[in-house]
Image (cartoon, rainbow, N blue to C red; front, side, top):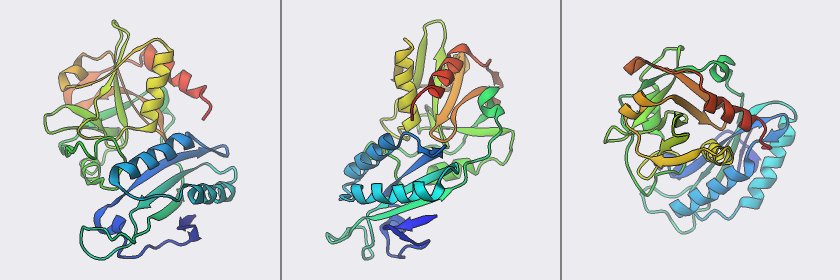
Length: 276
């Protein structure tokens, strides 16, 4: 199912600034058992992103009504719902016309069919060679300019490697190609995740895990994480809104093995109890 500005349609105008310049944002939402998971958090991030990009999006109630139509169409079918907001259609050139109205796009897709073992026994990951671009104005938001992630993800085609870890221009860890990253220091009861002040996406699942970790009494810190920190970590896991938590058991580039640790398992259990 695809809706463009509330109408069944699978095309947009060639003049749409989302196509022309990547001028917009998106959200990817898991729809399971008739429930759009963490929908309010996704919509809040969407609105915050529009504010950051100065996109005059005043159509939230329309979007909510269109989402209800999508939920009804899906019924009990599990799916991925993708929402895109672009600045809209305008003339050629970077300057957006004042009369441009944002474009709303909602599409549904099958849930990825990843092995259950990714969550239960963990995954192998690799280091990506492509570095993330740095821009404090765009850091944290889920804008449509995802070429860094596209280039990084196309570096490998090995089903045994589930994710690639991406670094900034200073070789500090930022995120996975499709996920956020956490490392655990068991002795100090610390959960660390990269500081996203120059690049990366502040994921909805990332925020949820930080909240759960606080409830579990873990010390949480957003900080600079190096490759050496990865070598010294007791546990590592990646996460996103679709896949939940995947423990990392192997970083192939540094021949580092991890056990499926107790803190990662505690967080998985706590996440399974959350009303979404």
